[in-house]
Image: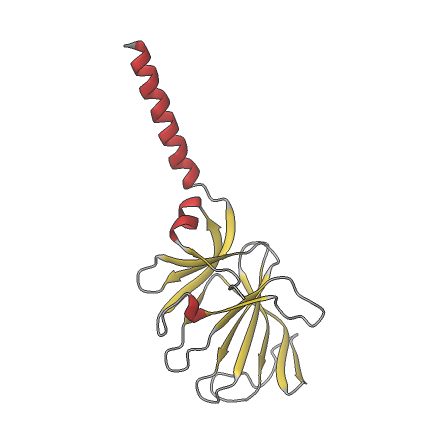
Length: 183
């Protein structure tokens, strides 16, 4: 009888340990939550000071707009640059205080931005569905090494809340990990 109680206690400890283990935050990531349900849809492992960019095709003038971000020490998303080719609806016409407005290689750049966000609300384009997520080590041209189309992970027309947060093993198993596509 004593042995049976010991075995039950051991199994109970193991089950509780596994439950705690799979729910313990172990890694930071850029997390995409479905805007309607709030469920984790996909994630990209990122750490403090890592950078990423979101490129979209402007729905009116059909040129690329690149928004560059980095992860802050307190896990906020900081926009530090925007690059675009045409002025128009939704595009800034000048830089803010302490920012730098440059025309270079046929594109407008606003640099030294320090816009911090707890989260971003992003809709994957439906009519012009050409959003791309880029990240990774930067080369001398400041280009990201890895880029994937949103449509590989998200439905056109759907919206997502994007934030930097800790993920658990359970999140890791439930969500889809964004990674460089096979070439």
